[in-house]
Length: 160
Image (cartoon, rainbow, N blue to C red; front, side, top):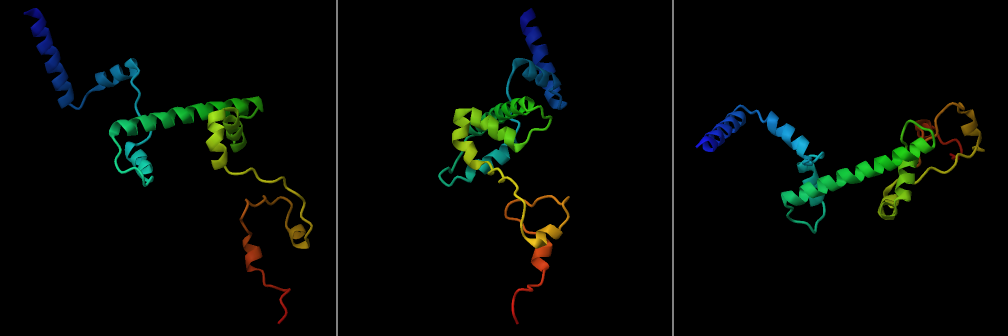
């Protein structure tokens, strides 16, 4: 008799907590029990998965596993990049550190190194007179970019 009264009281407390929009106790229980929650929005993950034309339907369980897997992969990659940055006594993680971390982990290097941008070639001194006129403190351009003044310059070499 006593156990059923306690059970009823617990159920009523839970119902009142759900009605109030509470559930703070439930959140604390989830954190303590070690239940993983996705850190990426499930709608965004679903849109990314649906980009593959071969996939027509995706279950919520599959989306959860994909999201958690991506989270674990990024945590592993950033931890490796952090270690590489610390080896080089740097405080900021750069693309070279991520590339080194991916190279160190063989399964990751098989697919990720192809996706990462190629490192820029070593800067060589330009021999043309126009680039000597530019100030030495200008930053080098990224590959494939042009300066606006090169674009607007009138073609003096073209005979009329």
